[in-house]
Image (cartoon, rainbow, N blue to C red):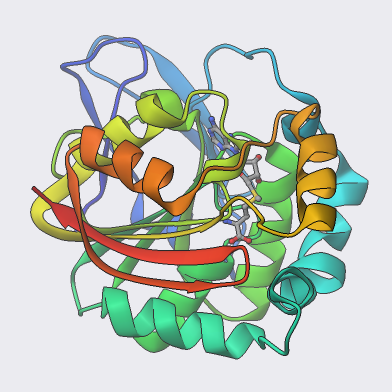
Length: 267
Ligand SMILES: C[S@@+](CC[C@H](N)C(=O)[O-])C[C@H]1O[C@@H](n2cnc3c(N)ncnc32)[C@H](O)[C@@H]1O
């Protein structure tokens, strides 16, 4: 099945992605262009669709650093949920929940938004190698890591550099959208949630893992100090209100400590 992206310059123009782009065991370089002639490069399989650099918060800027990207998954992400919940929470348990709620199907298409190292896209591919996985981030450093890790896992994934506030996809493209930890980092969370709703099919599922406000005094102190870097925390009621405003209903939710997993469906 061919994946089409929407031209970042001309909303009506669709551009087919070469299938080889997703085959990460073979380096692919080239370019794609729309019927209007606007051209986008593909370097080492990563499709560059970010047409203008935006201003970043401190938290977002750190994700563009090679050092952060290279350490992110192995030093932080695999331990993060145990550290954040205060009890053993192996990454395998998170992957199980992801696969259980999303249930990837052969031939169906899934999008990992703010993918960093594409942990979620890789997990969905592993669960269903006949599914089509697309992973989007605006950090090239993170996408390079995603590429390396996906290749090592023998996972075929389309890697797209773009801004989640203006996704280069047509409406109702995806059967599932997943977003792990990214909500807290977004500068314009409602805009991104609206975009997630737009690109998701009406019978699709949206899996979100995010951090909620802590109820302990030390947690509050830590979260208050993190907020200056651009990270936001909501109560579960506040984030559910955001989901509803973006056009989603909460189908399932599971909270442990400050970590909240939500399965959303279209209203
Ligand atoms: C906390 S990390 C999430 C990592 C990943 N989803 C996971 O589960 O490990 C947030 C990621 O979102 C990306 N990001 C933040 N805002 C974005 C935006 N507007 N568009 C695209 N990527 C964004 C950052 O570059 C970073 O890689």
